[in-house]
Length: 284
Image 1 (cartoon, one colour):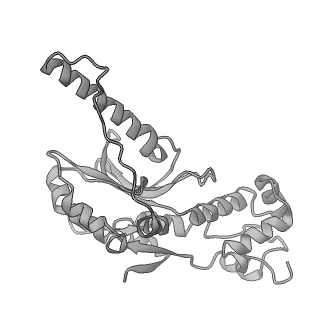
Image 2 (cartoon, one colour):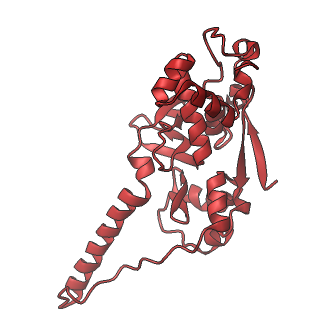
Image 3 (cartoon, one colour):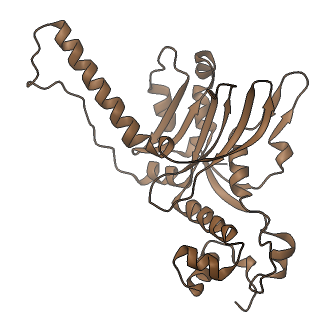
């Protein structure tokens, strides 16, 4: 299907030891399972505002929508056209200048084998909407202006390298800052010899910037051997922010409302709007 629900899945299915030195895990499912099970236990205190079902069972299984890369307009054509560079081990996928995903593997041969598989990956609702409704991204060509003195090939090479450094700096500070400048929470899932499998969650800060969930494998020196991310929509960030605020306030409505800078009635409205109305008693 081009769009699919993603229910919370049992942890043991996410990463499982196989015979010998093999580990089976499903790409991105670790990260999605970590997000869907966020504060899954529900209230730890029997506040009268919460329903008996919430206190007994916690949050019912959450589900979110995701889209196959095949339904992200233009992605298949881009993967077919874009050049794979020598020694390339990863890629950052942008849709309308929004970072949709980052993908890193250990070796260039691995990347060449898996490059086309990006159309079979999962992407968030925002990425799908940008591809469907977004306007063409304006071109930003890199030019060597006439103000620079070019007296030979050496000057031309120096000017080109200067432009390359400027572009790299712009890319890091503008296009990738949501991954480089954001504090993520890492949860260790599995360890095998010198490698560790992690999943990570963003801070769920409602500042309008893009935030990702993902999974990574690092070696004993902390170097990335594998990385895959999934961009959350604004609504998913709001739900994560709300759940973290409730859990941080020990699920006490007045404390949670104060943390949000909102009234108690506004907190109840947000809980219902986020799809967590089953937490509340019927009379609240």
